[in-house]
Image (cartoon, rainbow over all chains, first blue to last red; front, side):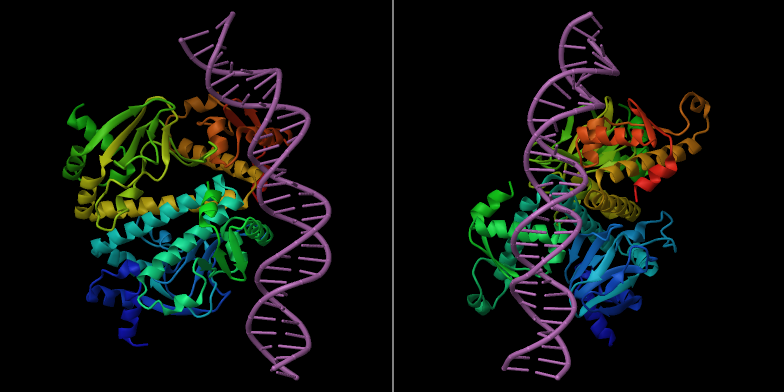
Length: 249
Length: 249
DNA sequence: CGTAACCTTGATTAAGATCAATTCTCGTGG
DNA sequence: CCACGAGAATTGATCTTAATCAAGGTTACG
C-alpha cells in the first residue's frame, strides 16, 4: 500500500477533512488498514481498547447484547464516519490503560468492509497539538450525543409502529437529499419514485428499532394493509407519506 | 454579587477546575446566575438555545416527554456538573443561530437550585483560545456518551427488576465511595449501615428507569418480600447485597 | 388537623415477546 | 440452468411483562 493511497484514504474521513498534509502524514504513521467480511467481528466490548476506528467502505453495526443473546443496535456506521472515540478520554491522565475497553460490540454487516484503526496514544498527542481537530471531534461527539438522545426518546416513549414509521420517513428523506446531490440521475427512471431500499437486514432493522423480526414483519404488514407502504423484499414503496407521517405522532 | 464570589462559584464546576485566574475572569464576564425552586422549568426543548448550564446547587432532571405526557428522565444532574453543552457545536460555522434549540427539557427537582448560564457565543471564543478547556470538554462529553450508551443498554435489554436492582446497587456503591472520602464519620452511627437514601421522588425514579410509579412500587415490594431490601419511605436498606447483585444478571 | 401531593394496591388490558411451523429467497454446486 | 439447502422472513397461537384504570392509604406541611 503506497503512502499516497493511505493519505487518500484518510481524506475520506470527515473528522480529518480539515487537516494539513503534514498532519495527515503524522496521522498516517500510526494508522493501519483492516478488512472484514459480512458477519465478522471488529471488536467485542470485552476487549482492551486499541484505538479510534474510521470506516472507509462497507457498513458496521455497533450493538449491545443481553445475557439471553438479544441484540440491540445502538448505531449503524456508514463510510466516512468514525467510531470508538470515547475510550480515548477514559482516563484523566490522558493515557490509555490496558483496562480500558470498547463501549460496544462492532460487527461488519457488509462484505468488503474496510476500516482504518488509529492508535489511541499517538492520536491523543496529535490532538493536543491540533486545536482544529479537537474542535472537529467535539462537534462529532456532540452529534453522536444528539443521536443517542433521540434514540433514547424513541425507544422509551414511542411504540414499535411509531418507531418504524419514523425510521422509514428518515431513510426516505435521507435518500431524497442524496438524490438531489447526484448529478447523473438517469438510473432514477428505473426505480419507483417514492421508495427506499433497506440497506440492512430485517433482523438488524428490528434490533435497531428495539424489537424482533416477527414484530417488525407484522408491523410492516399492518402498514401495507393500511395502504401506507408496499413492501417488496428489501425495498419499501411509500404509498401515502402524509398518513405515514401521522403514524409518528 | 461580588466578582470574587462569582469566581468562587465557577471554581465549583469540574469543567472549569483547571482554568487560570484570567480565564476564569473572562468566563465570568459572560456568565450569569439563576435560581429555581422545586418543579420550576429551566428550559424546554422547544426554546432557542442560550448557552451552557452549570449546576452549583440543588438538583436538575433532564427529560423527554411524549405526546401523551409520559416523561422519560435521560439524566439527573448533580452540583459541579454541566449540561446543555451539545448545541454549542450544532452549526459547522461555529456560530450559534436562533434556530438552535435545547436537546431536552430541564426541571429543578429541589428547592434552592442554583445554576450558572454561560453564553454560547463568547464561550465558543474562549474555547478556541483554550486547548485545555477543549480537552476537558471532550472528556466530559465522552463520559456523557458512555452513560447514555449504558442507559440505552439498560432500557432496551433489561427488564424493570434488573434495572431497579442495578440502580440501587449503583447508588449504594456511590454512597460507599463518598463515605470513604468524608473525614468526619460521626453521623454514620446514626443511620443503617447498608442503606441508600433516595434523593429523588419515586415518580422521578420510575421515569428514570423507564417505567411508572405503580410498577416501581410493585417491584420494590417484590424485592422486599424476597428479603433483598427493606423500604422505609425514601430510604432503602440493603438486606442481601449478593442476591440483589444476582438480580441484575 | 385538614388537604394536597405522594405512594401503594388491586383488577384489567394491551403490546409485544416467545414458541413453533412454514414459506420464501438466493447462492452454490451438480 | 436447475435443484437443493441454508438462512431469512413470515405467519399463527400463546404467554409475559408492564401499562392503564380505579380506589385507597400515607405523609408532610401549612
